[in-house]
Image 1 (cartoon, one colour):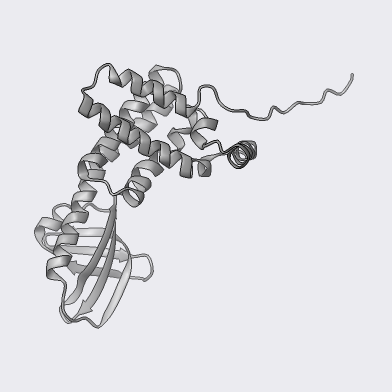
Image 2: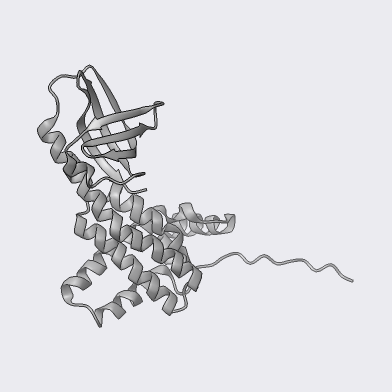
Length: 242
C-alpha cells in the first residue's frame, strides 16, 4: 500500500461571520421591538462586538485559529468578528458580562441588566437558527440569566459604598490596605472580608443598608484605613459578582 499523506486544512474566514449574525439578529428583533428597546439591543450588541474584537482571540483554542487571526488582523486589518463565526461568541460571554461590562464600560444598572437580557435572547436566537447546539445554549442561558440578576445588584452595591465613603471617611488613620476583598460573611452592619494580599480577615462596619445588598463570594475593590475604631472605608471601586 502506498502511504497516504494527511492533508490538514487551514481554517478560513467563517461563513456566516459573527458580524453577519449580529446584523441578522438585530434585523429580526426590529420586527418585534419598539424603537427605544431596539436601540438598547443595538447598544448591547455593539458593546459585545467591541469585547469580541478586543479580547475574543484570548479564547481561541488551537494554534491554527490563532495563526489565522494574526494573519488577517495584522495583514488585512480584519477584526475578530469578521474572521470567526458565531461559535466563538459563547466562549467570551462570561468575560463580556462579568469583566468587560464592569471594568471597561461605565454602565448604569439598567444597561447592566439589559446586557444579560439581550445576551439571553441572542443565545436563544443562535440555537433557533442552528448556530449553537442545545447544550451550548443552556450553558450560555445560565450565564446570561445570572448576569441579568447580579450585575445590576452589584452596581447598586458599588454606588452605595461610594456614597458612604464620600460622606463618612475618617479624618485620621494609621495604615492603609488597598486590595480586592472577597465578602466571606455578612452580618447586619458588619462585613467580614478576606484580602488577596494578606492572610486573615478584615472586619468593616457599614450601615445595614449596605450589608443588605452584599452577597457572599462577591469581590469588592476598597481602600481601607486603620483607625482606633477598626478598619474604615476610605475609597471604593467596582463590585464583582462571584
